[in-house]
Image 1 (cartoon, rainbow, N blue to C red):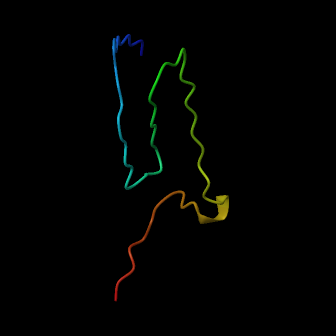
Image 2: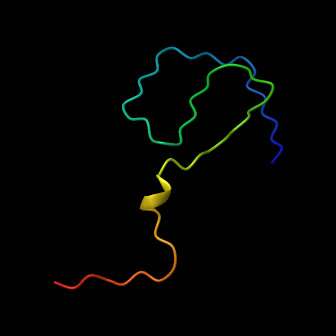
Length: 57
């Protein structure tokens, strides 16, 4: 995705961040490029492959 934004004369006085999630980007100012990456940190033995049988109580 290519995006071009012109924030001419932008002024930021005060910023308060209450919550940050697992995929967050917070940027004030100029940037030439974003390089985003992701990884899956669940160990392989915790991954369920194939049919999953529901547990009944």
